Structures are given as structure tokens and as C-alpha cells.
Image (cartoon, one colour):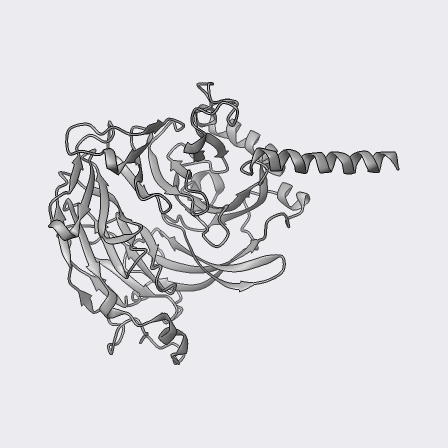
Length: 457
């Protein structure tokens, strides 16, 4: 397998286009008017026979001629093995997909650098912009706004304060309770609890809201005029900008952070505001992203400007100069911007980078040549089993779909190449790639028998 990440972009892209019908079960391409730095799946809102409707959160990073916005879209997600081959083959990078429709626009005070959704309430999202504050939005109760020049920003339902300098990217929501985590240029990691400021989902569903009302169920007894919430804890230990943060999937008290100081830090709020473990050289350059395995809480992924993804076992981490990763994944030719574990399989994860590639890995296949025929090939890194090469510039974000686990949304900032502001793609690799080998062989034998029967008749 050629190293796709190092070939000229247009050559790589042309080859990828020719392989779409072979590699994908479904692919929707959506050319964006404005770039988006974040993309996140929301809840399913409707189920049908051949496709499901699902919420999608995006942003619009404008040039100032119209306001920046937080966009709530509805996506028709085609179910597995439903899309016809001719539909898969009809790919047009200049078009906007009919499967993606804007549903609501919130005028955001500043650019939306990152979006995260609250697991305990699917209507609540947090956003980062170029300011010290984290903004909380109840997207259901927020009015739909027209982003025209001069329009005043929408009012956030909560404003989380505690940073002393801009907090632009590092943002996480806790899986176990309504807590928010952030990091910023002030080198701090800040923790908030919003438990006391939100109502239950049942109360949200039962509330009657007047059309266009800015009063939501998010804030108890207050209109949505941006009431502030003070930090529960401020954690100091980084020596440069904190670029990403993540909760332990099973604890609101334990979390980790990475930054431009090349450090990976583990924190435990129960023991104080100092690092529990500080790995001072987790990578050979700035760290951009981190994720904690929801299926195995001992495994942590980090991505870096050194072009690698590293996997650490927290049981083997000690404070000191150099971290010892379980494995170093070398499949990118530029800085890694985003890593995320699959919600479906505990050994699978994705990594996206400035090289325009989104790699899918299975660390369970490392060293198993029979499962990965190219494992000994330097151009086919061990553990890599799929390369999504549909973007022509840096892939700034992606998100696995927990409701449809092998479906991924990814976004790239490649306006100059597409004639638009960026590219949004929703895709699902063909299941013959990731299913167990014996299942695949059995199915192919069935097709072989069917084809032979047809030819005999």
C-alpha cells in the first residue's frame, strides 16, 4: 500500500475518488459556504425504514460580512447496505448534499472554535470562542436567528467563568454527570459543575415554550441572559497553552490534559489542584489532542505536531521526563489535530491530521500479520486498516456516530480547493473491511454460489 499521506494531494484525491464505490457503504459530501472548525453528532430525532434523521452541530467561521454562527442541522443518515452503488459513485465535490439541511442558526459572539454536547441532556451544548469564557446553549429553546450584518449575538444560557486568558480549543463534557472541563492560554485546566443549573430532560420535554422565547429550561428561574457560573476548581501544572482536555469516562473527578509544553497530565480533583501524574515529554513536539478510551479506562490516546499518535496505559505512567507509550502510530505526514476512540469497538480509533487524511486504526491487530497483510510494510503502518482520503486539506475535526457506530462525520478547511469555505463529509466504510474474516469469507462464498447459479441459468 502506497503511503497515501505523502503523495501529491490531487493525485491522491483522484485515486480515492475512483475507489469510492469499492471502499464505502455510504458517502455524503457537503460543500460548506463558510469553514467549520468543529462537527458533532447530536441525538436521533426520527427513525425510518431506510434512513434515520439525526441532529448535527456545526459552525460557520465567516469573514465578518455576516455574523459567526452555531448551526443545528438535520442529517438523513442512510442505513447500512441501503445506498445503491450508483449513488455512491455519483460523487461531486462542488455540491451540497441533499442529506444535510440547516434547521436552526444561533448567532455566536465570536468564532466557534469547538463544540461539545452534554451526554445527560441532548439539547445542551458548550462552545469555545476567542475569549476566556465557555458558553452553554440550550439549542432547543434558543430562537432561530437570521445571521445578517449588524445582528446582535444570541444570548447564551450560561457563561462559565474562571480562565484568565483566552480558552479557544480545549473543551470536554463529562459522560457521568453534568460537568464541563476547559483549558486555555492561561495554562490552566478549569472544572465546572452545571448540575444545579439544568433541569431534567423529562422537564425539558414537558415544558411549553412560547414561539421565539429566549427563556429556556436550562436555567432555573432565570431568563437566558447569560448568567455566570463560577469554577469548581482551577488546576495548574502546564507551562504553556492547554490544547485539549478529556474526562475519565467513568469519573467526573479524574481527567487529563495535553498542551504546547509537550506534557500529558492526569488530574484527580479529590486529591487537590496539582497534577496527579505529569508526563513531561509525552511527545517530541506540541500536543494537540487527547482521548480516553470509554471501553478501557486504562488507555489514553494523544496526537501531536510530531505527526504521531501515541497510546499510553495510565497504570504505567509516572511523573518524569519521558513518557513510555504502549505504541507509537506513524501514519501521518503532518501534525495530528484530532484523535477519538470508536464507541463500537474498544481497540479501534481514528486520527485526523493536517495532511488531509483521516486514519482508522485497530491496535488489537498490531503484530498480527495474518490480520494485517501489510503490517511489515513500512508504507502500511501496523494497526492501520482504513484511510479516508476524501479531504484535500487539513481535517480539523471528526466525530464517530454513537447511534450508528461505523458512520463518521469529518470536516476540513479547504475552501480554496472547493470554491467554498470547507468540506463536510459523512461516510461509512464498507463493512467487509472491519467485520471478522470468517464472516466476510462466508458472505463472499454465498455471492459466488449465487453468481454461479445465475450463470448456469
